[in-house]
Every structure is written in C-alpha cells, then in structure tokens.
Length: 207
Image (cartoon, rainbow, N blue to C red; front, side, top):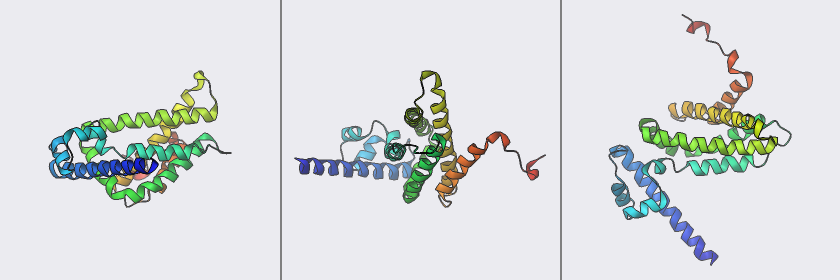
C-alpha cells in the first residue's frame, strides 16, 4: 500500500510540475492574460478540469513555490529561539532559508517578472504573504507566551521580518539574482535592528 501511495504521489508531483512549466512558458510567451487555462492544460497534456485539481487559479500556478518556501521557514523556526531573542531567531531563520532560494534563481526570476507586471498575481502574492505573517506571528507568540493584550508584539516582529524579506528579495531579483541574497537579507535585518529612524540621506543626496 505504501508503495502504491508513493507512486501515486510521485505521479501527482510530476503532473504538478508539468503544469507549472507549461504555464510559466506560456505566460512569458503570450502574457499572463493571453494564456488561457485551456492553453496551459493542452501544453501540459492534461484536461482543463485536471488543472483545477492542482491549482485554484492561474495566479496560484505562478505562486506555487510559496507553500514550500513557507514550510521550509516554519521548519527552521520550529527549532525555537534557543538562547536568542525572538528577533535574533527570526533573523537567523530568514537568512538561512534565503540561502536555499539562490539555488532556484532562474525559476524565481521568471515568477518575479510575472508577479511585478500582473496586478492580479501581485495582489494574490500579498494575500499569501499575509498568511505567512499570521503563521510567523503565531510561532513567535508561542515563544513569548504572551496573552491577548500583547499579541501586537509577535505581529510586529513577524511583520518586520517579512518586510525585510520583501525588500531584500526585490533588490536581489531586480539585480538579476547576482547579489548574495543571504547578505541582502542580513543587511535588511541589520538596518531594522539599528533603527530606521536613524537613517538619513547621504550628503550627495541633499538638495
């Protein structure tokens, strides 16, 4: 039975990846709006109804990597803050997970181009990131053992960490993925750690 289940899961994963590849190729070739679900299904050699067994929408195909990325982050965070402060633990986890992204550079660049040029995909991305924030805040709240009156603290820490992730990834992807993402991520956390209120324009930037 376990062997049968394993084979079934492998076949499902192959189909899922085939849909992703076909969709990304067509989105780049025809534009997101120009590539229909029927066209994606035909390119992946599946029936259109099968598409919806795997993805609720075209937007979710572009963002299919979000679930795996969140799972990797949660696994890292579940190890707990040890003797570190929650903020330091978040920094270590986000920097560690960002190192994995660099091995997926080509695919992430493809996805990023679609996210930044297609409003509906960008909006869906923000929805999923809000779920990330809720998940991370729940983990941090468990570390702190705070009551309802202090839930703003884990929410604030999670929001700041996600902001660091968004800023560093935007910088990394805008530069074609050539910079070190862990270094950019660590730099964003360092800026937040030091306090953005202390950041001022460089002398050459002043009018």
